[in-house]
Length: 133
Image (tube, rainbow, N blue to C red; front, side, top):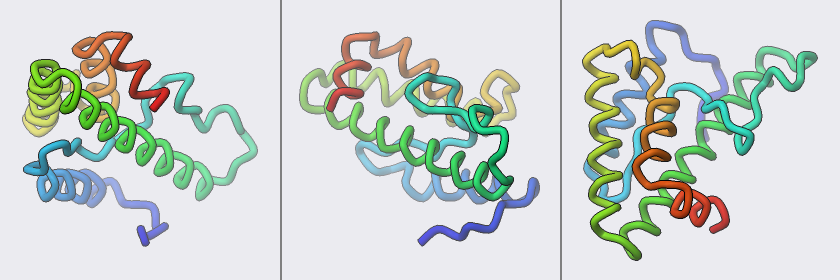
């Protein structure tokens, strides 16, 4: 059960980063997304302008959860099929996390930076296999 209360701007980043930190040492972990990725696989709230703000918050949470789940599937797949690529993807996720923590503006959205860099790192074949899984 996740609280449905929208996080405040001061508490949200700390909460998400703390959750990531707690799960960071797991073998196929990925940081929790901090913003919804712009992708056709993950619809944006702008597609429904009549949605209330609470629905938008819930939609964003669902997109974040889907991307986190996708990342776990991708990492598990790579761990079994291509250990070298798994290590590269894992290092890239850590780099995104570290640069986000350092305040790098290009990594302000941990989810967006992860999605972009992960897709670049693993390539379209592995990305598609994880999507189809």
